Image (cartoon, rainbow, N blue to C red; front, side, top):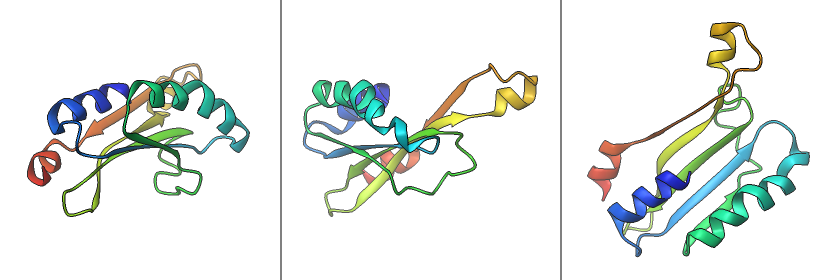
Length: 117
């Protein structure tokens, strides 16, 4: 998440509003830990980035195992555009038959970024 925020800040500049939205499909009990251990450090490092917990997100449920995130940028027209999507998936667990395997995957829509900004 930090990588994408740094890269988008470098490409778009400080004037384009960014929003990081994090959702945990696992357990709602982990939200306080998520806010203190993950989101608070991001807030302190990136001035002007809105950081929210997406408690009502359902898109990606079943694809992402638990933790997932989006990064949106606000277009000059005012439209909020999703540029980054990522999260925890179970591909390697299923492929290797090993429940201890972990994989976090993510991607940036570079064509969308360049065409919109």
